[in-house]
Length: 201
Image (cartoon, rainbow, N blue to C red; front, side, top):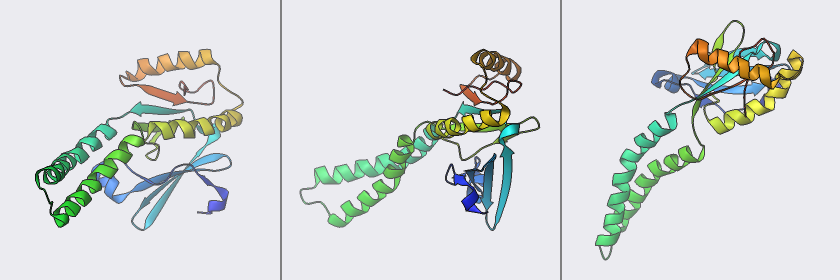
C-alpha cells in the first residue's frame, strides 16, 4: 500500500471473536476521498475502500469488552498481589527472589489491566452504505472512535453536499431505533439527508 497517499487513523487492532483475534488484525486509513480498512492475517492483506460519497452512517454500540477483559486480568492479579503483600508484611526479611518473582508476575497482569481502563469504554463500530453494513474493528474504543469520526465527518459532509440538519438527524435516529429495535446505547454519523440517522456528539 502506498502509505504516502494515506494517513493512519488507527493502529492495528484484533478483530472480535477468539479465532479472528488470533488470526487477523485491522487498521483504518484516511485517503483523499475514501476510508481504507486494512485486514492483515498471516501473509495476506485485504483492502476495503469506503468512499465518502457512499457512506450513510457510522453506528457506535457500547460493548462489555473492557469489563470482560478486566475480570480476566483480575483473576491472576489479585492472588499474586495478595501473596506479595503477605510476604512483605509477615516476614521480617523477605526472600528477595520470591519478592522479585511475584512483583514481575503481578506486573504482567496489572499493567494491561491499568492500560485497559485508561483507554476508556469499549464499543462496536459499524459502517453503513446503501449496499452493506461493515464492522470497523479498529474503532473499538469509544473515545478514539469519537475522535476519528469527528475528523472525517466534515469530509463526508463535503463529499455529499453539506451537513445534515439537526431535525433530520433526530427523525432518522427515531426511525433507526424503531426498525432495528436497538436496546443498547448507539451513536451515528452520516453525511446525506437520505441516509440513516447520523448523530455524533
